[in-house]
Image 1 (spheres, one colour):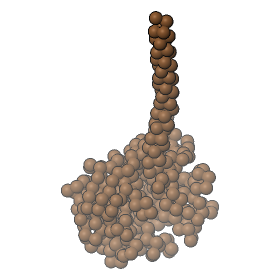
Image 2 (image 1 turned 180 degrees about the vertical axis):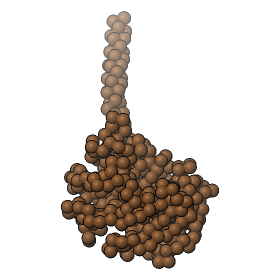
Image 3 (image 1 turned 45 degrees about the horizontal axis):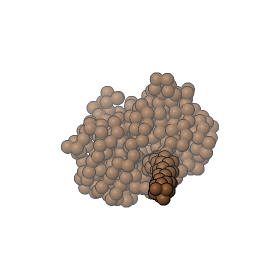
Image 4 (image 1 turned 30 degrees about the horizontal axis):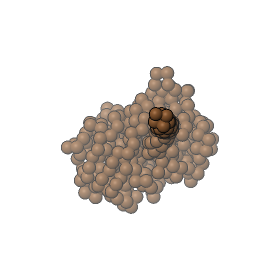
Length: 366
């Protein structure tokens, strides 16, 4: 009887030890589970953050600018300056690219839209739509040197670095004309050389072919890309894209791969054309109210700024593209510039409600 009692006690003790061990193991597993979960979530979070193609690194507040939209940028790399047209504020604002601070405001402008900077001359050529002129500034003192007369509603431009010619859109609907001009400006001589006439009331954007003599232009109301021979100063082809989308806006050019990029508003799309044939290769949905587009040949990416977002597309090959970013922007923040030499993307954000106008600086992520 006594032997049986001791045997039962031994069995009970072993079971208790086993149960205690099992409980400790469960507690240990539980205690390790929580930190491990946190670590996994943190790692996934880090991967998501790293996956964004643009990282916001700084904002430059512009509290004095309170009237409406911005338009286009241009850059002075050697002088470490960035210029931005504040069209409704009647100004061009100048930033130091090393400190990302506002350093000057050019204010004797009616409605600035686009610019060309000549570093060799230290001159800034500003398209002033309100004055119907290209205004010329010396950029050490920012003193105005002169102006070149155009039609009303002068707006976008593109620049040919080989000839130093500036091609400026003017006339059209804003000038109460049924036709539009692309005027050829010699920035060395500071004079207009010619007008190329188009039977359309709106031209939105242009791109220059550096290896040849072509200029591409978006005929917005005709939903057509016009191809211009810059030597002949004449239209040599037209490429309708109305079957894909209408109201063409921004333009960029991948000359190496023979691909021309165009955006539209109705519906908002990125349209890719073969720049040899004009054939539409593909199209993809993109951000609303888009107004600026940049192509980054180093990373094979396209950046499109529009209302509330910046869309980023990756070129897989010349015929295939995928959206890799839908970056939060701001209300009507639809103009921007990519500066590949600095690896930065700058977005102009107008004032909205109680939010101050600003320029956002993004670092391009590989």
